[in-house]
Each structure stands twice: as structure tokens, then as C-alpha cells.
Length: 400
Image (tube, rainbow, N blue to C red; front, side, top):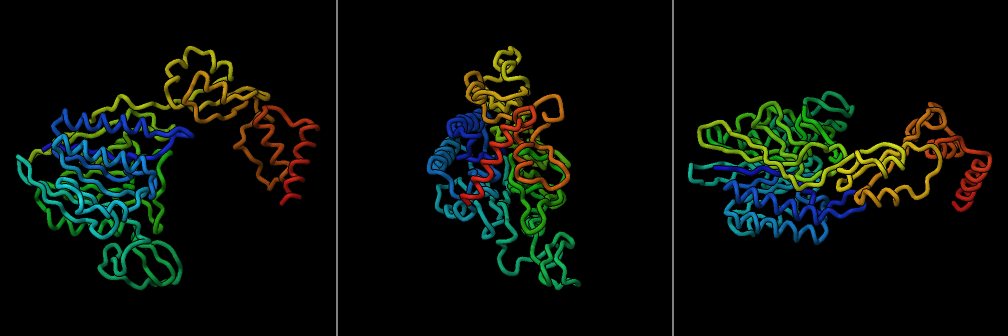
């Protein structure tokens, strides 16, 4: 059988002020084409299908049509909730949808095994959506112990992957995931199996657009919790990558959602022949809009031929002019319609230092305002500018 692994669609997301719904529709169309052309038997979507817990109507409709289109290729679909999704909103449709659609969210059915039959034999799919340990049901065991234990100290902290609060132990992200996988592992031992999970696995490379999983005090899980399964389809991290071994893999996002995501976007196709090691193929999604960070004076950016390929990309501009500029973003967008960020990086040091540099002592509001002016304009604030800033600060305090 053949499996298509994707994740982190983030339907409803914007890039800067630009809606991505049109790009996401094109992305889905291409994933559907890959599923059809590659004769995929099972599509797994490993969480963060939406960008927020209460998605916009357009995103909900987009997912509905995507599931219909994927099922029309003949593939079954397994989808789990991620940390961006509303777990109960995903889980609410479990059991109500047409055959061949399998959804899981929250703790209620986490770790359940779906037994599927294909032409070359059975496949056991373990669905483990993102499990927020702060929402763990009463009695959820901590790692390595079937019952809660009393710690030796009153102090808060972490012990053996558990979060200690006062004299109570709470499950951690690692412990709740390990517990659900241990139960599933015992049932599928020695058989062809796939885990679909949403987690931050230790040792993986991150991007700027991911939301941290600092929940319950522990934000990552060790890779060995996935031992014993044929293939592990992971979601959460936006960079496609294998962890420790090829069969534990993040597919990455099918669209770029930050300027750190410069690698080509793709989905993962896995050939899971019974009795054989998984054969993994990375299928690029060439239609995805890329990202670019460009740097120079404003005029160099507007005129330079070396930036021609960036005209269709999401652009972050670092402008090195010293002195004030008239509507620089509006002028940039005349050439780069998808420019979403502009930073001033003045040259020459001293008054031209970047806005991110601050002194070690606590500054007065006027000093902070003058430093910001210097970093933005590339020159020290004149007495007239200092007077204007002081007047503005005084007006704010009076109004407050």
C-alpha cells in the first residue's frame, strides 16, 4: 500500500496582511493530484489543519472540499488535531462522516487503533492528536508510573519528564504521549503499523512560524517513544526532516509561513509493502510561493536586476539607507506586490545602530524614543526632533 503524509496546512492563515486562502486552495489541488497520480491508498494529515481553534468559515469549507476531493481519488484519509486546532471541534465529527474518513482530537480516543485492509494486507493506524497535559483527564498517569506519586520536595519543577507543582505531579506532554503509544505498541507488535502524531520531537530543527509547545512544563518528547512502529507520520514542525531514522518523519508545511522556511515545500509518499522497510519519496509542490529576504538601499531594491525573481515571492526588505524615507513600503510594493515586512538596517554604526541594540541600563522614555529615532533615521535626533518627542511623550502622559 501507498501512503501520503502531509501536515500543518494552517487553513485560514495570513502572511502579513495577505490572505492565503487562494494559495491554500491551489496547494490542496496539487496534493489531490499527487494522491491521484501516485495511486495513494491512505492520506494522513498530522495536525494543525486549521491555523486557530475557531477557524474562519472559508477555512472550514476549504477543508470539507479537500476531504471530499481526497476521498474521490479512492484514498482513505486519517486526520488528527494539532495544537492550533480546536480538538473538540475536530473530534465532534468522528464517527459521523462517510466511511474512509478517520478523525481524532483530544484525549477521548487518543491512541486508538484503526484497522484497515488493503490489497497487500492489513495496516494498523494509531491516531495520537496533540495532547495538552493541562487538559489531561483525572488519573492520567505520569511517565513510567501508572499512578500519581508524591514528590519528596514542596518545590515546583520537573522530575523524570513529569511536571511537579507543589506536592502534586502533573502529566507532561512527553508522559501523556508515551502512555498512549505504549498501550498501542503492545497491540500492534510485529505487525505493519503507522503512527500519526503531533509533537515536538527532541533533536528536530524548528522554523520561526511554529507555536511553542511549552505546555505542562515540557515541550518535547524523546524519539524512542516511537520505537516499534513501521512508520511515524509527524506534524507540528514546518521543516521536512527525518528524526534519528528515516521512518520517523516530519512532512513539513506544504506552504511557507515564515521567512525561515526557505527549503522547497513538499509532501511525503511512503511505499509500505508488507515485510519491507518503508520506501520514502519526497514529492515537491512546485507551485508554492517562495520567500525572500532582500537588502540594500531603497533605490537599489527598486532598480536592481538581481531581485527580479523576488517579484513573485513573499518579501522581507532590509533597507540600508541613512536618513528619512518617504513611504518606503508603498514604493517597494510597486515592484514587489507581496512585500510584507520592511526593516531599517542603517549602516555606519553609532547613531545608525539597529533598533534591536539597547544599552545595559534602564533608559528614560525620552532616551528610548531618541534611540529609536536614531536607529530608524540613521542619524542622531536634532534638538528640534528631541523637543518634538518630548512634547509627544508629555501629551501621552497627560492624556493617560
